[in-house]
Amino acid sequence: MAGLAESGGGLLLALGLLTPIGAAVICSVMLVALTVHIKKGFFAQKSGYEYTLVLGVAALSFAFTGPGSLSLDALFGNQLSGASLRCSLVSVAGSFHSFSDARHRRNKLKSLVNPVSLTSDWTGECQGYPRAEECCPP
Image (cartoon, rainbow, N blue to C red; front, side):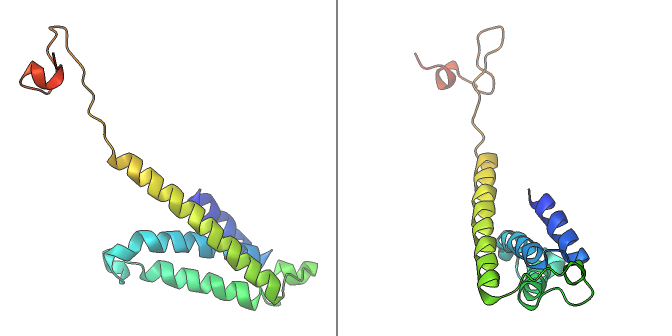
C-alpha cells in the first residue's frame, strides 16, 4: 500500500497534476516512514529518519505553495488552492498516516507472535520437548 501511494503521489507531483493531493499522499507516507525510522536516530547513514523528514517537508511545501506555472494543473486551469483546501488535505494526510501506522503496527505484532505448534510424530512423542508431560499433560 505504501509503495502504491509513493508511486501515485510521486507521479502526481512530477506531472504537476492534482498537486495538493499528490503532496498530501507523499507527506502521509513519509510520516509513516518517519515513525519506523525514528528509533534509529537522525542520520540516514544509520537508517535514521533524516531522508524521510526531508521528503515529507518537501511534499508539504508543494501542498502549501502549489504546482507552479510549468505544470499540468496550470495547463488545464485546475485551481486547487485556498487555505481551506490545504488544511483539509493535511487532515486527510494525517488520517491516512494514522491508518497506515496502525496497519504497520498490527503487522509488526503479528510477526512477533509465533505460536508454538505442538505436533507429534508417528511414535506418539511430542517434537521439540524432551519429556512428554511438557507437551501432552495427563
